[in-house]
Image 1 (cartoon, rainbow, N blue to C red):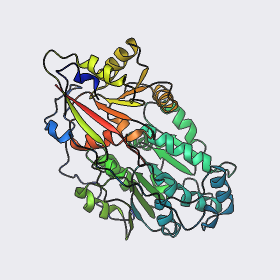
Image 2 (cartoon, rainbow, N blue to C red):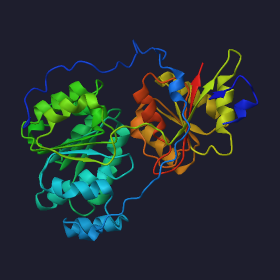
Image 3 (tube, rainbow, N blue to C red):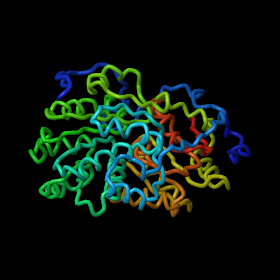
Image 4 (cartoon, helix red, strand yellow):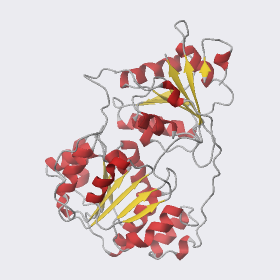
Amino acid sequence: MANHSNKNRSKQSGKKRPNHGGKRKGGHQRGRQGGGFKPSTLDPNMFVKKAVPVEFKEYRSDRLIADLPIKKQLIDLLLNKGYERPTEIQDKTLEALLDDRDILGIAKTGTGKTGAFLIPIIDKLIDHNQKPFALIVLPTRELAIQVEEEFKSMTKGLNLYSACLIGGTNINKDIKVLNRPSNIIIATPGRLLDLVNRKCIDLRKFNTLILDEFDRMLDMGFIHDVKKILNGMQQRKHTLLFSATMDNKQKNLVNEILDDPISVKLSDGESTGDHIEQQIIKLSGDDDKFKILCDMIRQDDVDKVLVFEETKHRVNKLCTKLNKVGIKSDQIQGNKSQNARQRALKSFKKGSIKVLVATDVAARGIDVADVTHVFNYQLPLSYDSYIHRIGRTGRAGRSGKAFTFVD
């Protein structure tokens, strides 16, 4: 635990079942009313943990990419991308997905889940160029863009097409894109349903549904939209659910969505952050919170930093202050255009900025392997939110640190 009232210490560190339209009780509320901010009621001591060393065992498949039972054109594209062997989640789900089995896939972030569902979809489309074929629904714009980029890189020269439909962009451009039939639609729920309501998309025409980050898709923030999508997909034959975590409260709903599924669980579905060093920064009345944050960010071991704030306005204000004191920063929050969000993320990945300030959208939407530190500038509103935030660091066996300010 860090107490920064002492200034010296501040330098330290449809086919399925027809009942998806009903309401589901339970779930947590975000705690915002009228755009305001409701302080967290969580016990700060929850955010203090010594890192537990985790032995990171790299999975090595017995077969090469060239050995997979997929089309040669796809094998060549994967080899050109630098793939040598399938990851564990890809290796253990491929045949089931090629056989059109429903699947529940649980694997940690960064283990190749996107490839796990794209490879069999692309393989099928090479033989049967169906438009539309698959619908991929994700909780954040950034994830949607990442999935489309991966699809495009895996389908060069195959004459397969995608459409990425996300909020924060001009919907008229989406309507024009949809005039050209696509093999797969990649979308966030709100924009998808908007286009469905405008009769630009007919959900009955899709064969396959993928819910990526399904644990987030099935919580109270998205569940009603997801149920509308499920109800609309009356010809759905194949359903895939992938995520890094799973809430046990969602088991019944998952069972309703999937039909005789194969379960591939490469983790217990619970993210604890045990491998991340976690501390709180206790502030007294006369401490300068912003100065303490700046002092910590400027330390030599702090390389790539995510700072979380609770509202869009607070993110904008904090990012502006950091830049004014010479700490190169950018931001991701709902009031920024999608182009601005993508520029910020690219700058962060390249290292041209040191700090990315964000609302919780970044806890799911950012896939950056080398984040060294996460700072919660306010206590998060839920422990689940906290776990997903700090999970942006300490990835793929690397060490990471998370600090939470306690006023």
